[in-house]
Image 1 (tube, rainbow over the protein chains, first blue to last red):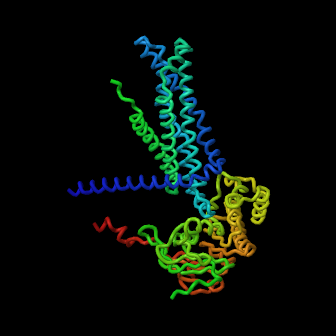
Image 2: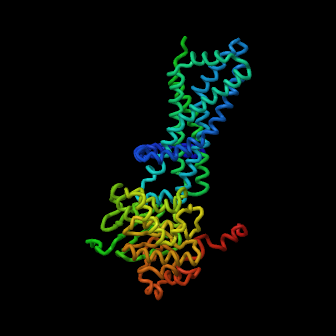
Image 3: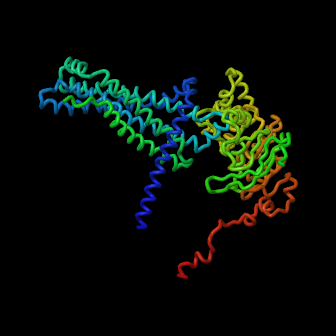
Length: 265
Length: 273
């Protein structure tokens, strides 16, 4: 009996803790949004972060996109060939990339490449009292440090996802047309005919935008909230990657449900 | 009837209590810092000295009691007024807290660029003036990682006085410095205070160095001011805590041992069982 009571107590404590943390994080993000004026008034601050989060992620995003597209074309070609529809491989590659893999895989890569760096940087600035020093110099660290990073993430993520998809389509074209001999014209014309701008591309952009906001929100919050020790920053960085990955996958499902157009039956 | 603070006092703490959660750090702090003086707050590690600085800077609010800076209650200021007040305060953090992504020059220029709209050539001259004052004009282009501990603290000091503050606060300015850097920092604290016409609060446990440069000392222990006086008075004080501190005795009112169960019972526990 005692064990059950203890278990319930622990469960209750855990739930209250989680809800409290969620509320605290939401309040933090609201404060960052409220302090965002400077990030746009002095856009050079955001530009610097765009370089670190966006430009420096280009290599990993482009190379991964290329390989994902090449694999998709290989796998898709094998299956489609059985139905005599091998030339539809372009549509398959482009649809998968634009609607799903582009935003999701780019998001996962972005979280581990840029999100973790943001958390570690802000966490270390806190540990070495740089944020505190800024506060004492009457400069709000949310406006000067956190908001530019947040907006840099929100802006760069859709662009990175788009580049990921473009590189993927190029990889698919290399494999399908150059390697497997699919007709070049059919490859592109089917893709152009089958992919709807609104349902395909715009939805993909919406997804990548939402993922970008979620990942950077998690990253800056974890950094700002990290206990000011080496161990604290290390575990905050890990949490950023884990939480962002889960958030991206869960949000992807939710957004896909909203974008689903029925079975057509 | 509580008397209003004297106009000659820049900082006044009155019956201040503070704690983190259930842990009480400051029980009852009363102290004043007269304008133009260098005042030290001393005490062992973890006695709440740094907390006092954070209360003065408005980063923490007292549970009860009042913190007045220039006659205004810090805890009751709104964000805008608090920031306006902080522009007239400089703080030197324990390890400098320099921005690691900027050079020494840009660190010192930071408050000027954030709070003034001065043209860049004037900012350049002001920064060079401040760096020259701490003897590091030649290090303007170095990054914090390339500076020694003592140099980093001097750059941070130049940054703290960039806006010519009325109040300069020092959090353990002497910790971890070699004897030469120690004297340099001590000398700078005194000289900058007098040259700028500022007021300084130095939180430290380095008694030898601070007695050389300060005008008045408050001793804090267990959340209370337990002794105070000028350096000359403290050197001949017979308060046991002050004596232990001044003479550097390992045992006394501040025990060598952290509170624990009796030594014998802990060692003999297994045998007794």
